[in-house]
Amino acid sequence: MAIDDRTAPPTPAPNRRRSVPAEISRSWLLVAGTAADRFERAQRSRADQIILDIEDAVDPAAKPGARNTVASWLAGGGEAWVRINDVTTEFWADDVEELRGLPGLQGVMLAKTESPAQVTDTWHRLGGHTPVIALVESAVGIEEATSIAKAQGAFRLAFGSGDYRRDTGTSADTLAMAYPRSKLVVASRVGDLPGPIDGPTVGSSHPILREQSQVAVSLGLTGKLCLDTEQLPVINEVISPTPTDVAWAQDFLDDFEARGRVIRDGSDLPRLGRAQKIQRLAQAFGVEAR
Image (cartoon, rainbow, N blue to C red):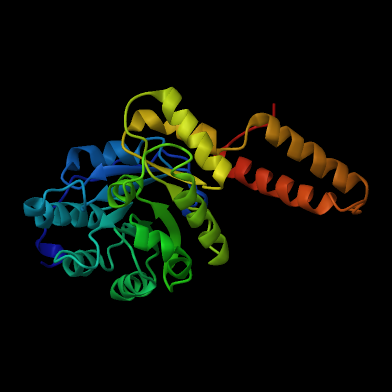
């Protein structure tokens, strides 16, 4: 269907979120592609990025309609990522065809990625410039993560934790899930990608969400999928540098400049790198020293 033939969507409201680059974005809010009434609210939320979902969140019979709804919103001024169906399904080709070239498409999240070719094929079909987040959701995907991270078009890796547990029989226990998370972290580093995005925490308990977010950060993940706007403040806080971290970084950098940027011992370079990273993230996330 041509863009001009689509039903004109409401004009999206201005985006009042802090603009955070996708490569360092912390919170990734999933919104069902059938829930057009939630698109604008999501765009105004505290999410660093929003993902309109036309894969798992949509019944197969409703996927063509959801795809059209999402495409119309993106063509009419909305901005979002889109989680598309995996390459092995009958929906993938239509997903990339309808989304290709839409002005509001910030990138796609490719469901159930299991090979680098799937990422590259998607990237090429979308025109060779739209970033692709590879959502890894199976044992095969985890073991192929390093190759996937090196694929042309790969932007970040993300962890489909629920499907991974279903595929492998792994429990949600922190220790049991440490291997796949660490695998994605190492693969991202080898592929020269930003840190990976963790799977969502299901439920309304903020203490559990905080604990799981802290575990993800401790393993090296730098983002998290979420299903509810109420989770956003917790995720953003936990994945940001703390005010005391920012104060330490500022003090170290001030001292480094005051001594003429002289390296005194073997610990200075790692500390300098950490301080500079904290400072960059603090500026992007609006965290002030305290």
